[in-house]
Length: 595
Image (tube, rainbow, N blue to C red; front, side, top):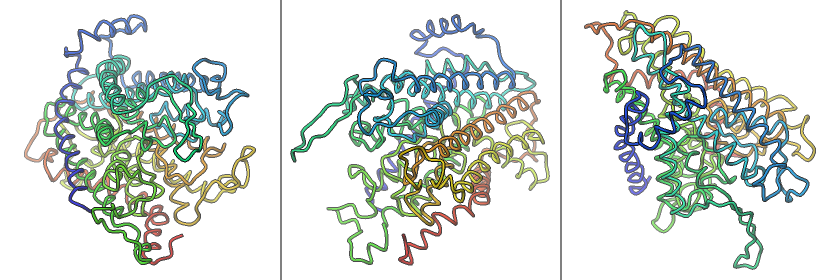
């Protein structure tokens, strides 16, 4: 590692730390219904939305009704996106003629299974893309379906987190808020304003925002090249802020249009973590003890920095097999050294490692380097980050409610160790809360390990049967440990609502499109619904006064307990699978037998 690379990581974290409290305070005011500086602009529009939707702003929901509203919005979102994709060939704003007989050569057909996968993906805030967006979907689909779902799915995640916080903050209450009000306020006061300004910033930096068709250009070598156009910058902003990650181009944020400069790269990374970090402070304010929020922030920070520096160390160290062949792999000042395969040379190893760690800590699938080209340990970090259920700052809302699920487990373990009934922020953690937490954690791991096991051995999953005409005969481009890692990463990314890929795998087949879609659905809703059940249970409880026997949950000891719970649960669950993938591949690399 270099001093410059370390400094870049430190500067990023310093900025993140500086904005955490202001963002948290603003979000607290929004969800508590307090007046903000944006109310003169958006309050009339908010009232209009309630009137048109028949929403009573002063009416609150039980956790069951809150869950039903969330599911109903998700079902509508899925159907809307699916139908728009299927009929995009008959709709306007499709200058490339996708889904028509006049589609250009190389365009991907929007088949029913691919449309299903994509609709589920964007509805669940996963943004997994089994296709290249610039050769598959029209401008209308990009804007009206995908970009809109980036807002909606992000707002749903934040609303669920706020509802769970209310469960901890309220006592003897039967309700946890109004789902429609939470989603509306989140979209109007938080997501939309930030995206407007960040879109203008990205356009200033060089991102495109237009409705032009592809442009034919002549290169300096005399070859012809097609340069894609489109409404990119507006989708770029919400893809990062909403921790969605779905790119306008197949190269995602390594594409010069999606990430023109180091300054745009820095803002994209800050947008990914900004709301997740702010939610931790908002949690502290809502439970009337900001130290509780900072304790969660501290636990997330330790895991984030550990992953970042491990990944950076592995990538900067490079592949020893190349070093043994006499290839210069050390940083010299004139060349970056390390493992530069699959990396954008503008950002190098430190920023690529930082971006990869951030995007997999959060449920954001954006990338500036191909994770498939990382060293085995470098690739292990983003893979394990996802398998922790995105608790390290995490996606918008998803990070906090996932972390609070693990906090419930950690408090339960801590209570067993001290011989007292587990308590957290004045609430007893009892049988129901622990059961719901375990269901949420097990649902994710069952999806990941179950689908990975089947896809690793079943003939149809490996591409021997049930492939569409013209598909590759084999879905995996790599054999052995690395091929297994690609499959494991695929289902981990889907279950973690992340959407990034290890690549090297042809996921656009009926088997992968359907199973990845099912994976996303199960992991999303069997995590959110138990979280809301916990919220309803906790809100109905009385506050328990703090005594000398109460386990402190705002100090370093509890931070260690949270980290230990996350790591140990992850290690026990996924270590056997990781041993078959990146870990064994690492030892193969050290022994010079990597293939």
